[in-house]
Length: 115
Length: 114
Image (cartoon, rainbow over all chains, first blue to last red; front, side):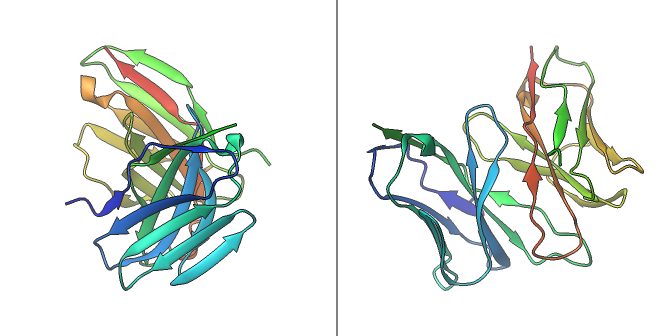
C-alpha cells in the first residue's frame, strides 16, 4: 500500500465549477500537508501549505485537513481555464534536527477546465 | 531573486552511460533535495542535502549519488543508466532550518535513456 493515495482523475470541468481534489494517507507521522500545481513540462509550484486540521483559505483555493481520518482535500472555486494543470498533494513528517525531511507525493490529478 | 535553476534542460543518453545533473538553489537557501518524477506519477524522493551533508536518502540504488558544494549548488550523478531511469529529475531548495521549511522546485531536467 502506498503511503499517499490520490484520486487519480483525470477531471474535466466547465469554467466556473467547484473542483474537489483528494488524498488519503496511511502514515500517522505526517504532520505537514501541501498542494502543488504542475503545468506541463514544468516543476511543481507550491499552492497551499498547512499543518493543522481544519480549513485554510487563500483566494479561490481552500485546503482542508482531517488528521483523524488521514484525509486532505483541495477545493478550487470559480475554476478558470488557467487552472488546468496537474495537482499534487505532498506530505512530510516532523524532521529531526535542522533537516526538513523528505516530501511524499500522491500520484497527481490532471485537471482540465474548459471554457 | 532568481528561482531554482537546473541544467541541462533535456538530456538523451544510452543504456550503460553516466549522467550528471546540476542544480543551483535560491540565494540564501542551504538545503537541496532531488526527486525523480516518472511520467504520470508524483515525484519520488532521492536525496536531501543540508550544509553539504547528506540528511536523507530515498529508496534508490547505489547507482544514484549526489553531492553539495560550498556554494550550496548540487550535482546528481547516475551511473550505468537503465531505460527505467528515463524521467524528469527535479531539484528543490529550501532554507533548511525549521520544520515549516518550504521547498521550491526548479523546472527539472528531462532525461531520456535509449
